[in-house]
Image 1 (cartoon, protein in one colour):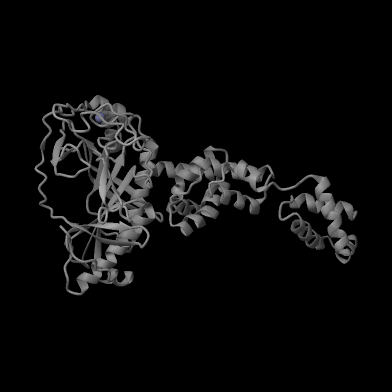
Image 2 (image 1 turned 90 degrees about the vertical axis):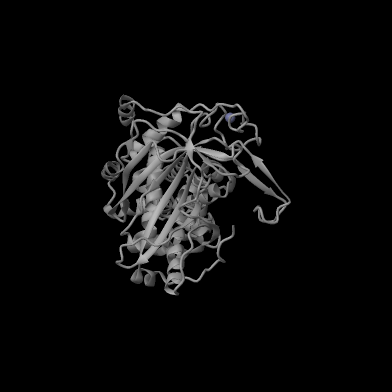
Length: 503
Ligand SMILES: [Zn+2]
């Protein structure tokens, strides 16, 4: 069914807040990194030769029997515990019935009214202020296959000649984490949504249960939003923007939907309950399909699987494997690194905490790690419209660039060119230095010749220095750097100038 036409009239953001209260809701799917799929022994690896990682169970062939992946249950419980959830003593899987070509069984094995984890929360830090996001549930399910629409210009189904389906992804374990409505965030709603997803990702990475790459679809966010007249305390009709695939897009999608809803409501219109598509390039959402709360998936308990009944002993044992509480961890890291409150807030706000941790682990000093990620690389991520974590550079690369500066192989300015080369796919930092010929020259022979040239070309400056005006050396250093195309060790050049002029 096609829904309303795309209405992209927007109300200015400040005006939205004067008249309406936003309510957010986030549904995040996390693809687990188990070795095998949720209900069969196929490798849980997406990509590769299409339809190579499949078997009768994940293809839904008659008579095939599923078996629950114990490691996936363990990961689900650890996620639940880290989100302060209750863990069910007994729960079941259910069949969610619907037809879609990328779902070979014609039902998804999911959990319905008996999720394994429920009633939790996460305290989300936004600019030093804490918002408690309540978690309604975290349940286990399986991923679908992937359709490929061939022959059209857009890769979408419209205009395609035919479609192909790859079932390698069908049956990969997913955990879906659903919040309760997040109220009271007001103007901060877009930032709260972004910070929640970023902090959730940080937690998932710390747990080690998923690669959690948003750009690879390991972690996918659906953003629910509704507005209600300011102070009314009621919940408005919501829309659900599907598969938003970066932190900054989560923020932008919330902001866009708030402005779009407000424009419709203030014009006397009503919001259609529907899913929306997010368009990364244009920063807008468009209508998907109409969705009512009473959508009937004919859920019923999965008859081929035994209930999951994790013993309390096991749950407590898993609780003992949890990483440090995020709030405690942040305070500890800040103290260890000697960051000011502002430096720490900016690091978290930029989504760089994990990257800085890894860069320091790879050998960089804390302030150097922060400087690169929040400076040059943050600028690049803004320019390219991607999250820092999705830039094609690793924390180990950044640590190596800083090491090259510390070893005086490059100076700060050349280091930026090294980063640029790594981001452009020219190889490791050392390879970029080699290929681009970026290493600074500190060899006295080559530098000495350049210094002699500079002195010869600037006799008046040389005289001033001989007369004791050492500050004038700057002009000669500049001349040498120019001749060496910036690739000279400035400290050594200064020493040589002063030696030669016998100051
Ligand atoms: Zn299989």
